[in-house]
Length: 144
Image 1 (tube, rainbow, N blue to C red):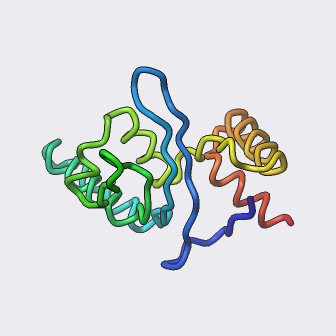
Image 2: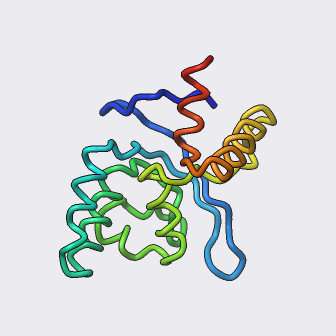
């Protein structure tokens, strides 16, 4: 899985969140990673009341998640601030961290062995060095 060290308005990535029994089903999605300037602007809003901050986070996710496989009764659920706010809390939190770039996507069982191995190595290095998986993958891409 080759990723760029840059995030532009055209950057798009595939994401996967594995199911957690009793909490939520697996989720596949496409997203645009949040650039540093947007992350910083959101963090500056932490002083807002909690409901206002959560609304800002949901709006940001709705803007950056471009596709997902969430459906109800076979009908795709549209992506907007309201539907993002209705996601199961633990699934929402994992999605938020992936889109913000603080954790990597889970290993999609549909990925090749090469991509899975690369993600495993990045997770291990990130945990040892205290960095994000995203930054480890970006550095590795820069070396290739």
